[in-house]
Every structure is written in C-alpha cells, then in structure tokens.
Length: 70
Image 1 (cartoon, rainbow, N blue to C red):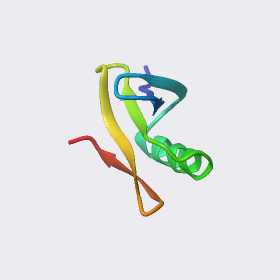
Image 2: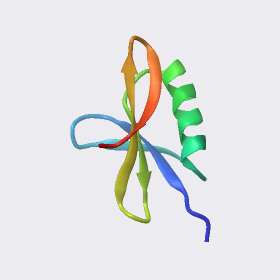
Image 3: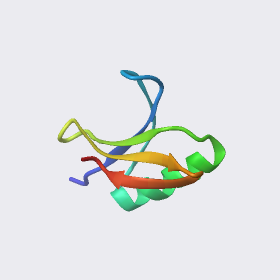
Image 4: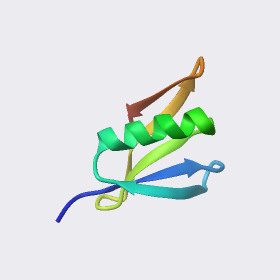
C-alpha cells in the first residue's frame, strides 16, 4: 500500500481546509511552494496513517519553505 500525505491550508488556530493528497514529502513541498506563490498563507502536510502534522510551511521575507515540524 502506498503512503500518501494530505496538504491542508490553515484557516485559523484550530481549523484547516483539505486541498489535495500527494505521494511523498518532496511532492508536498513542490505543491505548497506553488500554492504560496498564488495564495500566501500557512500550509501543513498531514500524514493520515499517523494522524500527525509532519511538516509545515512558513513565509519569511516572501520566501516559502517547507520545514519539518519540531
């Protein structure tokens, strides 16, 4: 069974909007960078198999990046 990750957009402190599923973290990074170019905001990568946020985006000086969650 292939693993997949969900990309979610943070709406507020407790709510997220599901955007799409991707196959791996590299794909998630690429998709989030593209989304941030069109619609800056906070995005997270969610692993449904562990029910955990495994990475989140951040905007620093308009340079999107995807960093592992601490």
